[in-house]
Image 1 (tube, one colour):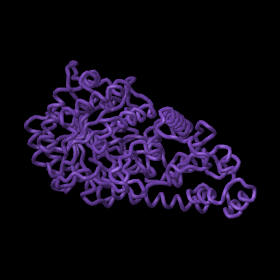
Image 2 (cartoon, helix red, strand yellow):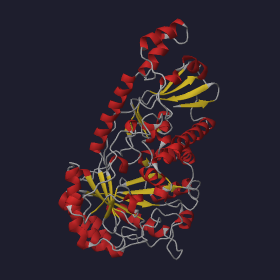
Image 3 (cartoon, one colour):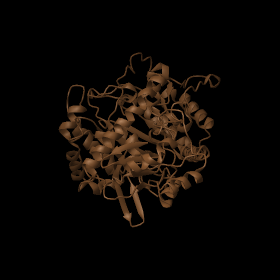
Image 4 (tube, helix red, strand yellow):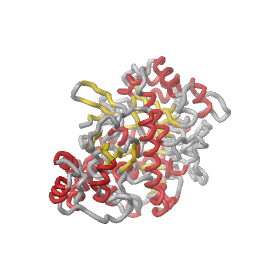
Length: 526
């Protein structure tokens, strides 16, 4: 991948090795290194067959020094067919090992009912148009049988599964019996539990439920979209009433009980400029000082074609704002309690540029952005997510639920009628439309729902162009803000990142014994 910078320089990124460099554009063009890559969704037209002869020729013609050529070779820019295969094998082995450690998330949408009327809603794409039933306590036997079959099929230990209450609103009063049954099922089988909720319901019943199952309750995710005025504009009761105060009070109760809470903000047009006011408020509440509290920044997007009602902003804008805010004091000091998620193309480049790093000691650097190659864009595409919907239909993505064409199974099917229809499980460099793309291992192959709904050909025609536009906008604005300096050296080759971080270890933030571990976003960068 090559992006043009100011002052006759390129930003170069190798999708196979993960190396990122700033190079002198004239020097790079003279060497003809663009011809040495498989990229641009086109057939390779030339490959270096004899690297040694290429080096000798370049030295003889004084195109590069021996040291520069050794560096290019080391970082994978002199790419032969054999080396490409070797890189792909390393990426595949890493991805398989990474997937083996990742928890499989079994989400439940037992109802699409919700008491809120949010301006944007991830549940609003005709999901409930043909509701025939809701999941209930009497369905727990079928649910248990399905999950056990899924676990055996994937050869998973019980500790690798988390059951997640989702919704609709997951803590509706009408779901109390069902939810209690799910909690009991999780403990009996040795699974973990997560809860995604608006946070408006937390009465004595749910307080008691959370307390009794605290040993397996990993996390409760609650959205606060800005300070009170902004949040209530976006996420209010159906009658227009305020929800912020109720949610804030329930978060206080959960933290006081020792329940692990992750507050999330969806970055959109209404929230992006009020984030500092929310952070100030949460600091004032004492939440960041609590050992059970985490905060997540999330990019608001139209997942699976959902309608954001005009709230969506570009990925580049969102990530720029995230970096801008957390480079400031006192917000930079909050980074150990911050999780940055749902990033695509800007993710690895932010890591490579070292935009949000925490230095815990002279030898250890923790980066808030991912530094590893993407196996897939998301968990559904690598087969580690399941959504069980209100009528028993099974989907591999929460945003696919309710779309019949994307249904892969039903929990009430007999075992011999199982019809898993959507399993990718393929390293992106082997996928037909991704294997020659110079962004493939950074983006992970794109959204499976978009591919299915738009058609694979149509999707990929725009895919790479869209990602490039995002990167160009992002890098240009990073340079404008002088967050990185690339013009201070006359060297032809400046190393920003030596390659992918293969030291990735997935760790749940919460163990069964309630010990808070490092968030899986807090990774050492080698």
